[in-house]
Each structure stands twice: as C-alpha cells, then as structure tokens.
Length: 118
Ligand code: 5GP
Image (cartoon, rainbow, N blue to C red):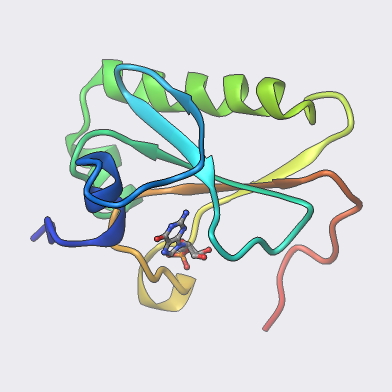
C-alpha cells in the first residue's frame, strides 16, 4: 500500500520545498538533498507508485512514456547528455530503496565510479 506521507509525496503536494529542475504533467525532477556526485538529481512520477513493480504493473502508457521522456529531458537540461551520466533506481529492500515513491537517480558532472558497491 502506498504511504501518502512519504517525503516525495510531500514534495509533490508542495508541503516541503525542493530545488526543482524540471516538471511536466507526469513527472517532477529535483536535486537530491544529499548529493553523491557533482550532479545528482531525482526524477519521479507524479502518480502514487511505490516502486518499479507497482509502476510497471499499474501505470498508464502515458505515465510510463512521460517518465521515460522526462529522464531524457532532464539529462539535456543538466547538460550531461553528451558527457554521459548514470541513471539508477533502487528498488525494494535488497535494492536499498529508502523512499517508497518510485524515483530514478541521475548522476553526472564527473567520471563515475564502479556500478555496484557492496
Ligand atoms: P533511495 O535510497 O530511496 O533510492 O534514495 C532516496 C534519495 O532521496 C536519497 O538519495 C536522499 O538523499 C534523497 N532525499 C531524501 N529526503 C529528501 C528530501 O527531503 N529532499 C530531497 N531533495 N531529497 C531527499
């Protein structure tokens, strides 16, 4: 069950502020509060989806397209489309997901390290 009190739901409701990078009908992108790279931005759907399992099963085609297109737009806005970047989604317990609202991380602005740290 989706928890409407998670921090990203509060950001979407504008109950807490964010450093917005991009917004459209389906998605919102904002800077991560605790950046792990020179550029670290989160891209989230506006719909209430817990994780990729939920999104893949229940989102509309428009919502899925909207989120994927937003990822590309945000990379362009951040100026990393050519230099390269990493997009990453932590999913569930083993994936280390802390906030139970689907989100992609975009990292860039520098050479990134190994793909997986254990
Ligand atoms: P997860 O581990 O769930 O994939 O990542 C959650 C991310 O959300 C973390 O990188 C964390 O720094 C970020 N985060 C947590 N609370 C806030 C917040 O209130 N504002 C912003 N902008 N980012 C947050």
